[in-house]
Image 1 (cartoon, rainbow, N blue to C red):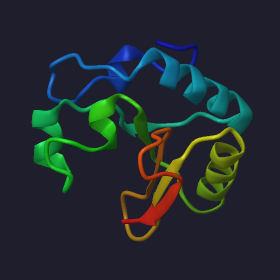
Image 2 (image 1 turned 90 degrees about the vertical axis):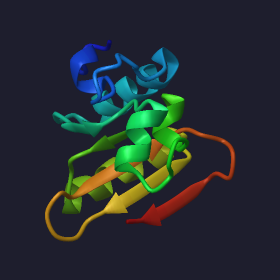
Image 3 (image 1 turned 180 degrees about the horizontal axis):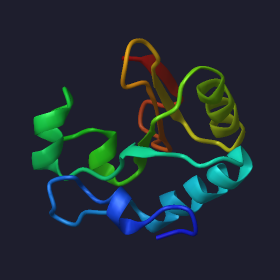
Image 4 (image 1 turned 180 degrees about the vertical axis):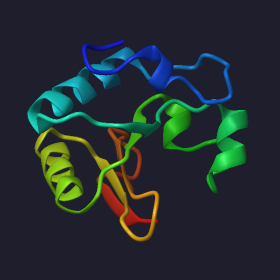
Length: 119
């Protein structure tokens, strides 16, 4: 889908084939270039059915819009990625930075944004 991210890693994990919006991924690609290091996608697009299984937001939520992505990053790298995301105009940033499975969520939604939260 972009020079640094494949359709396979971005598609809904249920196998339905849902992908993030191309214009969102163009912004994520710019973020990745500014970050300058590989980013491991842990979740991107999610269809409503899959989202209901894995998220407290049920059949709706940022990932169901095709305008949200989660990356496995921690500590100083999470700080840098969040800083760059804010500088590039992303409007939603969520942090899970305790225990195992640390990640950062990034989106560019406008309803109820800007927002920052922790999991």
